[in-house]
Length: 275
Image 1 (cartoon, rainbow, N blue to C red):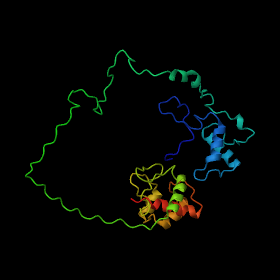
Image 2: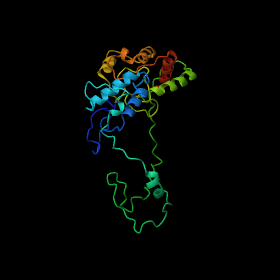
Image 3: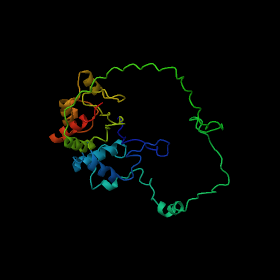
Image 4: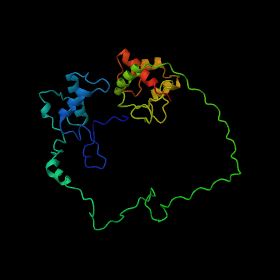
């Protein structure tokens, strides 16, 4: 689904040009799966799974990879009996003994080859010179006759003044920047920001929901925007508290912020990035 990695499948693909690395096809140890799930999942609410829930989820992932039967119950007693298909697919890193000494030799700086020649040309980019005049300096542009006066440029129409924003508290914005680190896995903001798993959030305050250019929104979010949802302080406040509750079936995986101060700080931080 979307950009989240697949956890099942890929059997026999590791030698392919584009292998599918899943728990079933790639992971050598089941303990890695259990530990990662228990420490880091669910996304946005890490560390909330109980031990029993983690065992159940790992068992379901094993079942999804056809590694156990549907009545299998995973526990600490039988954990080590589960043999992963790729358990022998990794090797010990012996590069310090076999390669580092070779790569640490003094580099050749001159007369390293008997012959130097062009072996390929970047013809698509047209950057390989084949004409001695290609690198010649361009001829100076002809000057316009002094008698010809340039026509006066038209006075451009005055652009509408930007909408004034309420004075922001720098300390609150700084706090919001820290809290926003929880969002950076999916969202970018500021100059040069691009859509990732989630849309760009530059200029989100005042924007109609589902309208970030180039991002593929869920039908639920597009419908919310078509229905008049605009990201204001109040709507962002409600959404950040409970994303799934405010816009049901949208793609946001984050569980929501729980602290009043964090919510206000993030809104202030978002508001500091205009269009």
